[in-house]
Length: 124
Image (cartoon, rainbow, N blue to C red; front, side, top):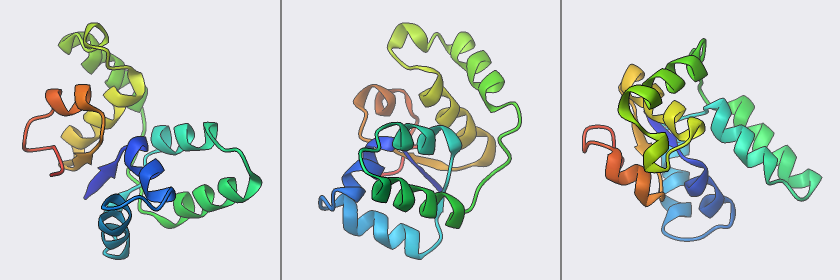
């Protein structure tokens, strides 16, 4: 399963290639996990009600994981790995923690995050 970061979702919603085609294929094959921090960021950037509807439709449709204590785990992981000093915030830490805990990969366009990810959890 793949956690698609906000940066990739934005490129997908803008229909930018190659992100649109690759992400569409992953969605069709039910390989993308919906993570609430990512969808919260997407909703934060909504400009039109139609955009909100589209984002929420994906949220309700996609598989999810148990996010109990996610931000506590993310904060602890961030502390232990000094992520805040590397410019990685709590949302990105939560994505990393989820990938590690559930054996997922992360697809992000954020270079500072990609530099931190092992090839084991980085979607290429």
